[in-house]
Amino acid sequence: MLAPGWIAAGTITAINWLIFITYIFSKRDFLAGKIMLLSIIAGFVELTADRWLVAVTGTLVYYTGGPFIVSSPLYMPFAWGVVLTQTAYIGWRILNIFGLVPAVLLTGLLGAVTIPFYEWWANGAMWWYYRECHMLGVVPYYIIAGEFLIASGLVFILYLLERGPWWQVLHFGVAQGLWIWASYVMTYSILG
Image (cartoon, rainbow, N blue to C red):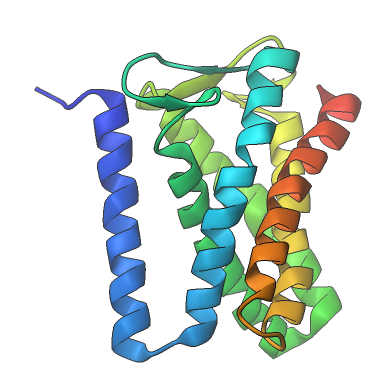
């Protein structure tokens, strides 16, 4: 028998974090450490966006079961941390190869194309779903556009983060979490 959705989602998220932490300590990649810390902070601040999507727009619905924090399953801030860490690290690599403007556009496109796959998988796994909005399959248009903005914003933060001290990670994490909320507000107002 399959584990309940929140247990499976939490386990997958925990395995990803274990891999990230192992990588940081084995490679001594301090920038990756900054990215991970930024991502988990942003993941907790993103709970404001989830609350808005669940309670205000009514378009996001989480399946019940398992522990919740605010309006989201407890695993969500950590899952956001995984997605942001993956996207940010790739965005940083793109930034070092192509420069700032191409990296903003390419990373935004990466987010708009790949992150909706997570949404599709989450729907199939019965973790969450969307309703009462314009969608491409099971993914709202405003989520796809929002992911473009969210991923693009990461590149600007990485550009500053790479050159700054550790303590700035807190500020940048909060800024990225608020940017997630702002991105969804903007795109929902246009495409919702």
